[in-house]
Every structure is written in C-alpha cells, then in structure tokens.
Image (cartoon, rainbow, N blue to C red; front, side):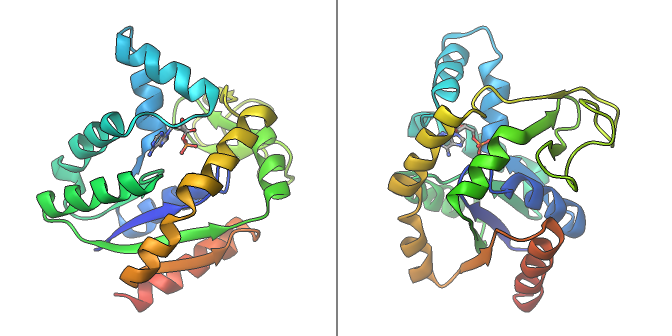
Length: 219
Ligand code: AMP
C-alpha cells in the first residue's frame, strides 16, 4: 500500500478521515499534532518549547518535526503503509520529507487535499472535543457529530476535552499560517502528479467515499 498524506487547514477533518483510512486499509495513522502534544507533556526544555508553540498556534521548528517524523516513520509498523496527517506543513518540510522517503525507501502515493470554507472551519474548531483516551473526535456544534452523552466518548467512555489551541484567536493564526506556508505545497505535489483535491464541506461519509474512490483507482 502506498503512503498517504493530508494537506488541509486546521479542523478540516483530516484526523477523522485518517482514522477511517487507518481502519479500512490497515494503515498506521501518524498525526504530527498528536506526536507533538505527547512530547509537550514532558518536563524537559523541548517539552516546554513545544507546549508554548502549540498554545500560540505557531509552527514547531523544522529540525524538531524532522527528527520526530523520521524516528516514527522508521519504526517497523510503518513499513506496510501509513497515513501522515499534519506533515509537511511548509516547503522546507516537504524537502525534508522527500529526504526521509528516500532514506527509508518509502513511496508517497497520494496527497489528499480537503478543500473547505473558512467559516465552516471556524465553527468546527470551537465545537471540537477529543477523547482523552482513544483520541476519537466529536463536534458539539453538529447534531450528527456530537457525543450521545455530554463530555463522554461514545466509543470507550473516556472523558472529552477541548484542545487549548481550539479557540478563535489561535484558529485565525493557524489558518493564516496554512494559507501562507502550507497551501503553496499544492503546486509542489501537483507537479509530482499525486495531488487529489476533495470537497471537505461534505459529510464525513461522503468525504470518506470520495477518498476511497481515489485510492481504489490507484491500486
Ligand atoms: P494539528 O493537530 O495537525 O492541528 O497540529 C496542532 C499543532 O501542532 C499545530 O498548530 C502546530 O503548532 C503543531 N504542528 C503539527 N504539525 C506540525 C508540523 N508539521 N510543523 C510544525 N508544527 C506542527
């Protein structure tokens, strides 16, 4: 199975779609946001630096993301295919990722872009809740995506929390960074012939079906 990356703005549903792909195709889901959040909990200089950057909505330094991604993709469970969500996020990271692929003898098959309106994202970001335990994602602003019982995960009974960067101010900063730094990557991958743009303003099921079609065609 060829590897997949998502290029999409904050709160566009890339984590949700990655989790669906993980199950459907038996891929490993790697979220750089989750890896960095884990690292930020450590009582170390690096942990404190990452924690500050995450809260501000900025981007963690490229050298740090390179090390974290390289280390994770080198692990044996990644050798049969993975979905990488949140990396690369700027052109230097795209060059870094090319180096990682070459070094680890891995192939990037699909770059999936979720195209979505800013107002939809802002609504999602303020309603997003995540399970502390299994990381399932809910949205309290949506009738179809909210948990059955308030603050409790439907899947595992874990407690739901709100990310501290899921507020309007941090969102605007993250969204502007996406437009400025990440969106230019679309041209980079378009030229490589592996870019697929999907309407992200659709239901979770329809988006998943559209991604499925692209992957099945490429198999
Ligand atoms: P996400 O969970 O993808 O929304 O990422 C949450 C936060 O983690 C981002 O706002 C950044 O601060 C940081 N982050 C995630 N991926 C990267 C990356 N590739 N480069 C730099 N910072 C990142």
